[in-house]
Amino acid sequence: MLLITDMGRAFTYLMALQVQAIGLILLAWWGGDWLNKNHPISFNWYILTFTFGIIAVAHTFYVVVRHALDLDKKKKGNDSGAPPPSNRQS
Image (cartoon, rainbow, N blue to C red):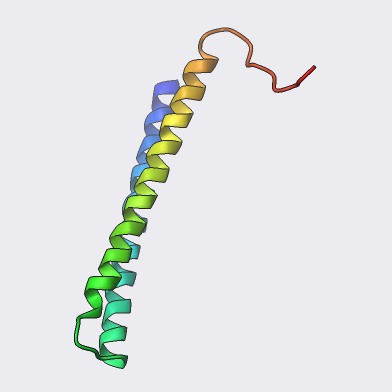
């Protein structure tokens, strides 16, 4: 049962990452389009907005992977049978 729970959690993270990535890319596209129409200059605003969109997607991916690795470390630490270390100081 634990494996199914872990697979469900991984699937949930993967789906959330995809939905957020699509949303950020669409937001970057909309922002670039709006800036091109309302503030025309010599360069295309899409270059700037898509760069920020890709950076935001990369940051989200990093946070999700870091969180998944932290959960894996906590799970492995709890499987050892030893009680969790206390944070109290004497």
